[in-house]
Length: 130
Image 1: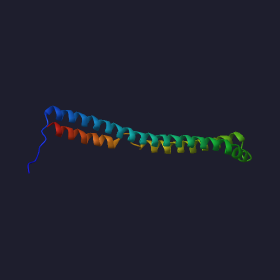
Image 2: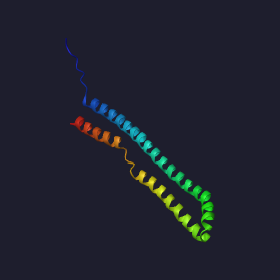
Image 3: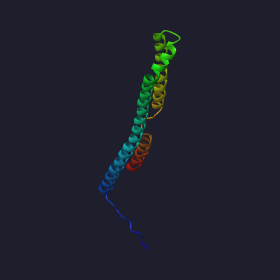
Image 4: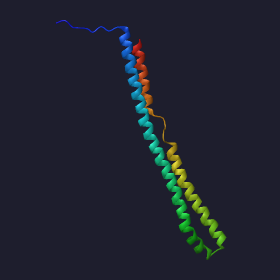
């Protein structure tokens, strides 16, 4: 049996390489888009939790401040009671915000999977052009 080798011209090979490279770049861009979308979603969730923490702290201030100040006001001047309660609530709110900011700092915004595959693609293309 005789094998039939398909002989292609250099122009056809470069045309195929250009087509496949274009397809590869489009796929890499799609991967980057998906990966960045996922990271943006996580960032959005973190920012939403920061907002919720602020709203909870504010609601806590409105709901509890008056009762605690009135209670403490029976044992000390009302202005001292208000100051103590205010400082305590600010500290709790600050702690909550810091927790979420630290969580956001540890989130890596770089699309690592895309960067890795682009490096692999670069090496593959170098090998094809040799």
